[in-house]
Amino acid sequence: MSTCPSCEAELRPEWKFCIKCGTPVVPGAIRPERLETPVAKRIALYAPLVFSIACFSLAAIVIAWLAINVWF
Image (tube, rainbow, N blue to C red; front, side, top):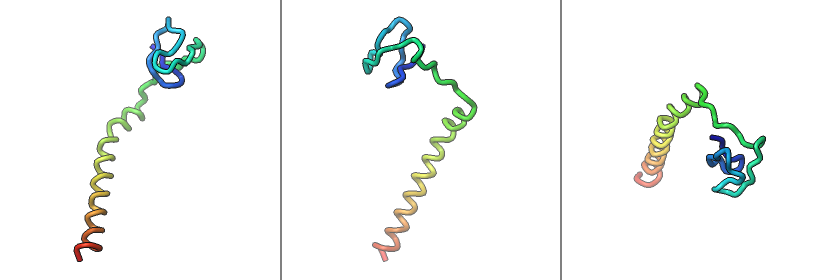
């Protein structure tokens, strides 16, 4: 299957229009499926960990700010 160049919905070869956004499907304009590269797999693997560390760091900064400016 291919994807729509506008909204990236899945397209069947026999369709003339995207069923999600209505974009006309031109055979040369359809992008092939995204390829999974080693870098993309690594990013997908570590993204939740990085997000968790960022959230924890932000919470620590907020607590430190409250401790300095409000509680004391």
